[in-house]
Image (cartoon, rainbow, N blue to C red):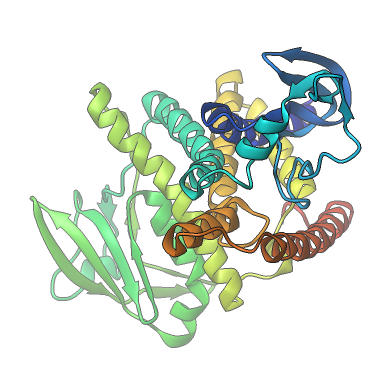
Length: 392
């Protein structure tokens, strides 16, 4: 049951993304042939206001099929050759009808670059909006893990920091070691920083420069972590008990909701940076299969505690994946929304349309490479799933 729920949630997140494209396409009067929830053969389908709305068999995504998308786009409707034309010269796409003027002057390829820019941006924006709204629900109910120290261990690194020791009530706002600097907005930032840099802290005996707030003042001190051999990790000696703070009022709730949302954006960007630098490898990357499996496992574990624990875990996973999808789609890669945004921006700067054959070729080649990469990730997910390494 948890796996089915995870699949539905993943489909919902992708559909929300496509709905952003759909809303802006409709706003700019770009002909939309079909808006689909799900993939594969249609189960239910109806034409409303000259757009076909379809519910499809496999709940793993969705699509917004605009007239004029390049051949590698989700719609694949650049060309109208072979489409049925009635006696009035109307093009008939299975009951969705457009005039030659609509297709010629309003299709995605010929509209102004600013319209292309907004339509492309609308998908990631909807993912970010969904992530923020659900973050608002999360922090309203369970609070936000503010990085305020609750206690400092005696004879620890924190108690002997220089030029001054850390103390209860200090709010951590920054960690820095050679080559790594991290703004701290929540306890999870601290835990992640220590985990990712644990090997370097042990190997090079790096001190951590900590930026903190104390009595309204921003201060800096330096801590030399201690190595705990039994646990094979470096520790500072500070704890964050009862760290979850419930906000009061809509303004404070919005502030913490934005921080919650921003944490997942920042984590996604950090992951990309670590991949490029080689600090993360194939075993750390998951595709749809891995995502669904991990999500299903998290939901199953949360069910053991309570129904509300399951709900909050589910919401957290949606925030994480939706923010991740938004960031990934903004990468300046042809065939992704970020690539379309780059092409539209170049059009605006040059003041003239780009060579469509060149743009379509770039999108097509990149799509092939992305499909190859996705198949590789799919294979890795299956291997990790059956070898028992997916959750390690």
